[in-house]
Length: 170
Image 1: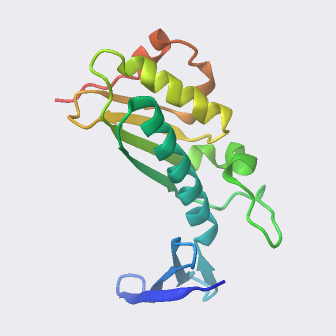
Image 2 (image 1 turned 135 degrees about the vertical axis):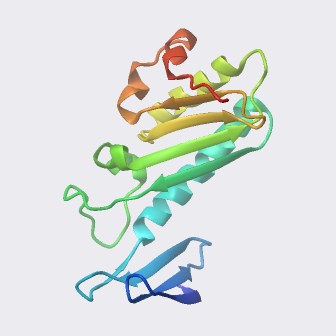
């Protein structure tokens, strides 16, 4: 797997080294020791973050007609239901087990008049792709802000169903 160590840092607080590694596929991930001295990495979640970010970025541009910033986080892999051998499964096959530990933030240039329809279309596509995660929409000017928990994604069927998830920005 053509991996390269980009940097090695020392974490004084936890008394351990952390390496930032990149793969030949352009995926960056961390390698570090756990509290028992065992090596661990977040390569799997990095592959999933890259998969989701690439697909959602493309879909958001298709729907809104402009580029969007997409940030994906999958912050825990402690679920015993994830078992794989040589190949990492796509996120959609394990998303149900990880949905409470995953977030997708889409910061884009949404239409001033059709933003609810755009968000609904992206949300529906995310559900179809089984990218189960908490979903946040923010406009570039930050006047539009919606936060939808992963467990509510499938409940939203119309633009009116989005309204309870609107957050006020001061």
